[in-house]
Amino acid sequence: MQVTAEKLAKLTTEYAGYLEGDKLDAFFREFGIKFAAGHWAAGEFADRFNPIGYNVHRPDFRDTVVDQIARVAQAGIEGIEFHDVLFLNEKGEIDDAKIAEVKDALAHYKVTPTNMNINVWTNSIYRMGGITNPDPAIRKRALEQCLQAVEIAQRVGCQSVSLWPGSDGWDYNFEVNYGVQLDWFIEGCVEINKKAMAAGLKFGTEAKLKEPREGNMVIATTAKAALVAKEVNAICGGNNMGVTIDYGHEQMYGDEPAAQLYMLKRFGVPITNFHVNTAKYHSNDEDRVTGTGDIWKLVDFCYAAIDTGYDGWFGEDQFTYRMEQVKAMRLSKELFGNAMKKALLIYARKDELEKARLSGDQGAVLDVVKRIIYTA
Image 1 (cartoon, rainbow, N blue to C red):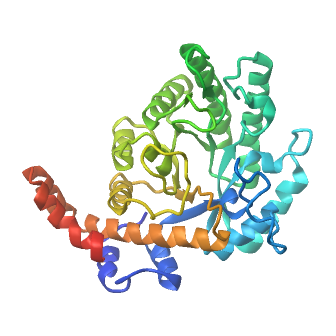
Image 2 (image 1 turned 120 degrees about the vertical axis):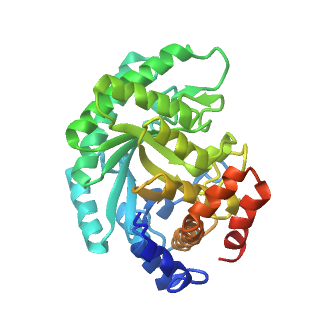
Image 3 (image 1 turned 120 degrees about the horizontal axis):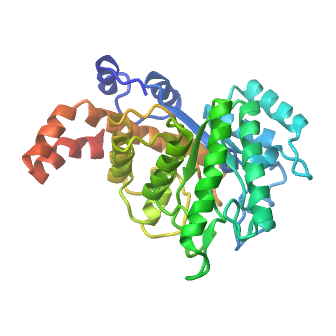
C-alpha cells in the first residue's frame, strides 16, 4: 500500500463520507490497495444440501472460467486467483489450450492473475490426504500435482502459489501419527518451495482448523503454518515460503486476526496472500461477504496490515450461495474498502493511539478510534 501524509490528508476531503462507485475505485488506486477475487467467487456454488448448485435455475448462467473472469471484471476487481485443476485435462496433464484461453481473457478484461491455489482434495483419490496420504503412491502423485501447479502458475503469470491442504488431517483421534504426518507435510512443502523458488514465485500454505477434515487439518492454525514455513526456509535457504492468511479461518478458532500479522512479522515469516471474507467465532468456514461481521475486528485487522507494511493482494474467498455473484463480489470490495479507509484514518493518528496505549487507559484508547469506527 502507498501511505503518505499527503494521501492520508485526502481521506477527509476527496474521500470523505461513505465510499462507493467510482469514488471507491479511485480510493483503491490512490492507496495502492490490490484487491482480487477467487475465480470460485464468480462461479457456481454447491454444498451438501444442494449438490447440483444454487444457480441451475438461471438459464443465462454460464460457469466457464472465461465467464468467471468476466464477472470479476464486471465487479470492478482487478485481480483473480485460480485453482490449478482448471488447467488440467482428463489425464491430469497441463492443457495448453486452456492456459492460452485464460490468458487471452485476462488480457481482454484487464484482470491480473495473482495466486495459484493447489487443489489436492477434490479428486476422490485424495480423500485420505494429499501430500500426507498414508499411501506412498498417492503421496507421490499429490506432490507431482503440486509441482505441476507451480509450472501452471508461472505460465499463467501468477505471483504466488498456495497450498490449502484440505484433505490432509484427521477425523478421529488415533487415526494418524501426528508426528509422521507433519514430517510428510514438511517434506512435501520443501519440494514445492524449491520449485517455486526456481520459478521466481512465492509459496505459502493456508491454515484452517477443520473442514473438510472434521478432527483437524494438518495445519490448523497460522502459528503452526508459520513454524512449518520457518522450517522449510531453513532447509531450502532464503525466506521464500510464507503463509496465506484467511480472515474467516482465524474466526473459526477464535484467534485475533490483527495479532497474527504482528506475530508473523516478529518471527520473519512472510505473508504470501490474504483471503478476506466473514465468519463467526467457532463456526464453520462460512465465507460470507467481507465486512458483514465485527467491524471493530476488521478495521483492527486492516490497521495491522498497514502498520506491518503488507503490500500484497487481498483476495475475496467467498461462497455467497444465495446472492448474485457480481453483486456479492462488489459488495465485498465496497465494505472492505470502507473498513480500510477507517484503518487509514486511525493510522493517521498513530502517535496519539500509541500514547493512549502506553497510558494503560482503555477508555483513552477507545476515545481515539470510536468516532472513526462509527462515523467515518
